[in-house]
Length: 139
Image (cartoon, rainbow, N blue to C red; front, side, top):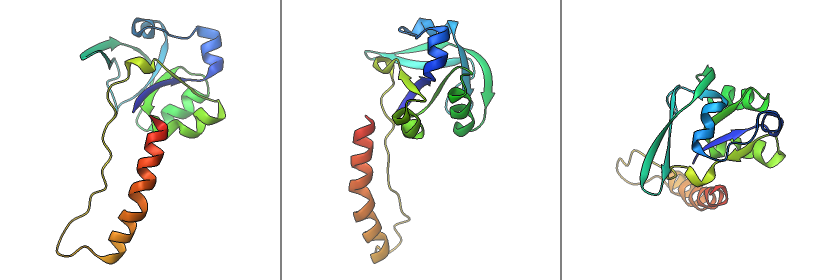
């Protein structure tokens, strides 16, 4: 899932956005590979809603965006699994969940040349249910 998140101290100082339009009043940390530096897209029902954001800091890695959000620089938008630990520890809070776009699918892909090697089959049998369970908890 693509989620908007922020440090609770930032939210205490600047307020917690409750509508998509509130994002325009907040400093944002934009991650150039996941979304535009000026517009984030959300969903309302079946409609896609583009929202203008103010990019205070633009980074090129999710880790940098997350570190900046933890430091209180502003709101950021990253993938839910990337902030799982920070969310559990309380250093980041997920916001505006009702407007999140549909989650992206996760696939385990292999080359598929000839017979499936036993080691690969064992890995897929091991990893697939665990990945499915973990992703279900993040939903």
